[in-house]
Every structure is written in structure tokens, then in C-alpha cells.
Length: 283
Image (cartoon, rainbow, N blue to C red):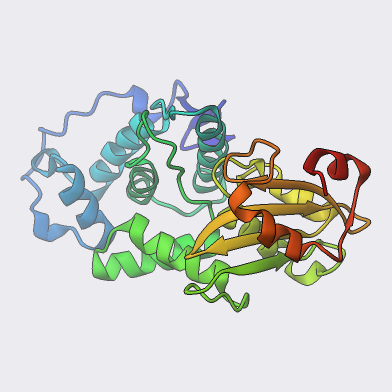
């Protein structure tokens, strides 16, 4: 994939021989150091957040070139997590972000790219399982417009908008326990893409539906999610025959958590179940 005269290979940005990253910039040879007042919007936010050496810049192009090198630093950084699930999901989610903001037809400036990547990765520590948010182009563009005017945190603004988008239309009561039914592509084709996003966001971080399995699973059958106080506790996957294929708790260990057994049994009492699931879950 061509990105600013470079290639994104295996989730790593590789500058080409003609890339500006392989040139030496002598920012000091200027007609006069640039002042902070000469920058505005997201450019100013970038200058302030990263303490860019604007006294060495001749023009905004120098800021963009400097931001590109900063972006490459973040895109080539190792974002390992504590558990295998975190490592896998982080890699998949970050690859999706990079592929989208660095695509040949994207309109993001280098300043915007580095602000975005810094925002979604700044809390990804090696000793935690925290995940970056899922990519949504419309929400990202809306976020950048707002941050340009307000200078709010990109990650906080994006997460708020993503959550509002996900729960809109689900009639979710955050104050009471509830089951969320996400219909399959067959049962609701017009909302399929949005329901895939919902499944990803609402899934526990240990589930494969957090990333790469959300679409194929929802193409095949419905998915039921149980939440309490805004936190997901149980997921039930159905096949194309409306039979229960899988029940998972937060631990993703193929067992029904004791604290949810009565809730689950009440919910599925009229549901069909595959023979494998009956044997596995004793239902």
C-alpha cells in the first residue's frame, strides 16, 4: 500500500528511497523562526502536544514533514499487551486504523495522522489488556472537526461518539440489566454493518468477536449479549438454524459462569440448542 512515498508492510511503515523520511532537513536555515501564532486548529494542537521545534521551521510544510517522522515512530512501536488476546486484538485493530488513515485515497494530513495514532495508542501498556477503539471513518471525521475547534482529547471525544453511535437504536437502559439482540445479516440486512460494529464494541476483550470473528459470526446467525451496569457479562452465539452454538462469559473458557446460570437458563428456555452445545453446557 503506497503511503506518502512509503509502504505499509506487516503493520510497519517502510519509507521508500525517495521518501522525505530519507532526506536530511536543515530546519535551521530559515528566514525567521516561526511563531506559535502562525499555527491554528489541529496544527497548533500538534505543535503544543509534541513541543515541535517550530523555531527551525520555514513553513507549515516543515511541520508536516516533522509530523510524518513522528508518525512513523508511533506506527513502528511495539504495542504488546499482557495477554495473548490483547496482543492479537491490538494488532488487528491498529492494522485497521493504519490501513484506513494511510490509504492512498485518504485526505488526512501528517499532523492529523500523528495526533490520531498517538491518541489511540497512548494508553496501550505492556502490563494491561486495554484495547484501542475500533475504527469508524465517519466518527473519526466528526471527531477531528470537533477537536479542531475545542482542542479536546481526540481519544475521549472519539470514544464518546463511538459509544453513542453503537447504542443508538438499541433501547439500552444503562441502569438496568438487559439482553441485547443483534440479528444476523439474514434477519436484518440493512443494519448488518452497524450490527457488526455493535458486536465488536459490546464484546468482551477476550472474545474473538472483538475483532476478526464479528462479521462471519453475524453473517451466520444472531448474537445475544447480556450486560449489567454497562458491562458485558455473557455472549450467546446462534447458527443459521437459530440453534445455540456457543455460550461464553468474560473468561472465554467455554463454561457458563455460575453467577449467570439462572439468567442464561431463563433467557434460552425456548431456544433450540445444538447437540454439541447441550453436552458442553449441560443444557
